[in-house]
Length: 445
Ligand code: PMP
Image 1 (cartoon, rainbow, N blue to C red):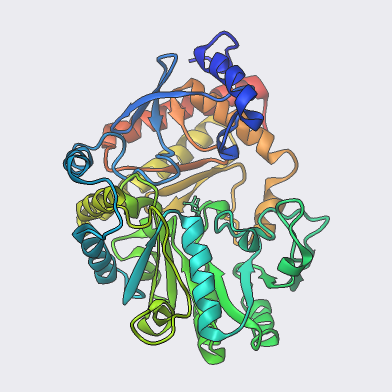
Image 2: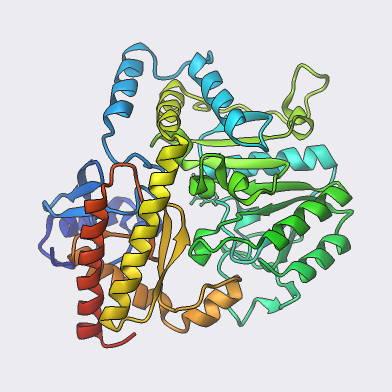
């Protein structure tokens, strides 16, 4: 394809969309050019847009489609369910089965409750931590993404001008108009800075309800938090009765037992989403019985009420159960092998093209970065990125699109079980062409 093309059907649809939607979209993360490309259909690891262009889909709806598009197993399970019941006020057995599967796989989960998104799961987890501890503040890492809840959006994308002292980062609003009273409820720390974080935990110990962390954040190109850092968080939160939350909405993909299983540090609460819904909207919060007891309406006065019109609807539960059952340890192993094959291939192609970058990541989570050393903190990521990073990333994104490879604008590429080794190799070859055309057309970065 040739992107952008002003007479394309996508360009026309986008023009139309601008009248009824601000910016012509309802998801800012998909706005990457003069217009948005509109999807027509998907099958396996391929997507086709309304102009008939074909892409190998490495975004998989930001990870939720771990079995690719139109998975026969999920279609069949959902078709059956659709004939019976979409959702109703009563629970279905599938909810229980999915809960049992999750509790069985994740060491940190003795009990679980469902939500409709990762954002909601994080929001509910924080409520639980507050009710359990009787404290109000939360600690989060600079640059950490935990969904759209304004409390945890703080210091999501800070810049050097405002991010403040290294050992005690500023708490910065993300959305304009975020109240100061809300910012006062957050303590921001630097990811992987063990001693500085320990100091801040101790300083705020009496006020902290929770420490929330994504242990393998997409923002850092899926560089893991060090074991030392996570063990320190576990030790200090336990010492001061603070709830440790692992946000595994994305990084559950790390393995059969989730990121916590791969890392070997077990939180009090875990938030889940994406792949556990089999492609339909989902979230979940789970944890040990003690903290989860705040939701127990049979055990005395209820501390945290939690419901929702579509919570645990049968369609999501059935799709999630089907998808998760298909993800055996062997399947995770295969996905991880393919992830490595992709990263090795991309790194080879970048080097051959004289394109300075690296494919970072683990398991089926990969990310192209336009620098060569893994970033261990958000500040390190920003320093290594240099000015105009997003613009350069968007240029690469355009070259990749023109080769038929769909990655996310920040370089994220996540695999699916619908991919064969041949699809991976085709991606590597096409990406190589994209790196070469970038260097030829745009010069070096
Ligand atoms: N936490 C993390 C780590 C995420 O990656 C995301 C979504 N990308 C969320 C929370 C929010 O999930 P959702 O988009 O389903 O609200």
